[in-house]
Image 1 (cartoon, helix red, strand yellow):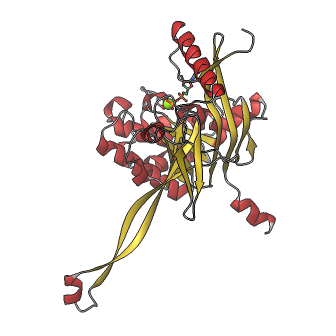
Image 2 (image 1 turned 30 degrees about the vertical axis):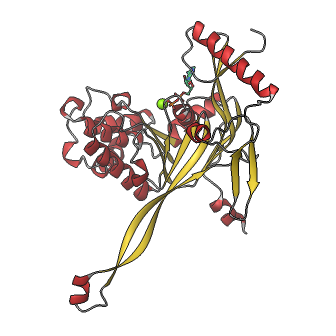
Image 3 (image 1 turned 135 degrees about the vertical axis):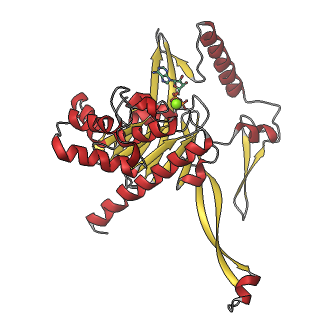
Length: 348
Ligand SMILES: Nc1ncnc2c1ncn2[C@@H]1O[C@H](COP(=O)(O)OP(=O)(O)O)[C@@H](O)[C@H]1O
Ligand SMILES: [Mg+2]
């Protein structure tokens, strides 16, 4: 393999054992606990997961708004763990576009649409015709060619969100991060936002990550990964299959009556980390009364995970671990903690 092709096949984003610990008073909240993720250049993907699972934390790290505690994170040529404060500020301005749930976070209410899109370019030192041309071009691409001179209050929620997308792209980022961009809009509007993100992804080859609560998101992206407890848990891929179907009209109009149709289907895969660990959903474990320890049966078909024969007799070390976790949860509740994962700092 030549160096060129090697470069091409390298992922654009690579997170390896990414850890983020937030400190609140003397407690540490583990928001990401060894997350692995790789994203191809030009990919349009989504991240799903319950509230508090670490989605925004990951987006903030990828966007250079926050630093990881440990692990590796690389975006393009940038090693985000090792960069100086200055370099990371520059990375954030030049390489990343952000779209937030509240479009207002990207928009200035007293400027019209085109002025809003020009603003980041002005701040980056661009002037004149080039700036206006690019702003107009972006607004046309997000479907707002007719609304360029409208102020924010004259635009609907969905239109404002599309202005926000245009603003995020003003400085030609390589990576677009959208954190719940459809969280505050209705279904029809959400569809226009997904369509806009898809178009931009295709036209600019823009690597795009959308965080979403929307269960239908898999229809609108190439791949969905689910985060659970700060780790990658599963991955859903959209596949388009060609199926042949008999059709009477096609037969009557002279052919052999066979028509080809494209059928979408979704495949959910569980993710294994480099140490061979995988996450099994809690409800599935409960269903089979699997806790603490399990038996692995190696079969011709694959690996079967079964409850251990003596499941009532818990291993003492596991009982101790669970008790310790329960008492930490009580301590956190006592000081008003609302988070799901934390640990005590070593020495207060
Ligand atoms: N700035 C912060 N300080 C302390 N804890 C935080 C901070 N940001 C997020 N957390 C905690 O980290 C965990 C993951 O949060 P977040 O990434 O916002 O989840 P999501 O976006 O999936 O809802 C949560 O337990 C949350 O309370
Ligand atoms: Mg969030």
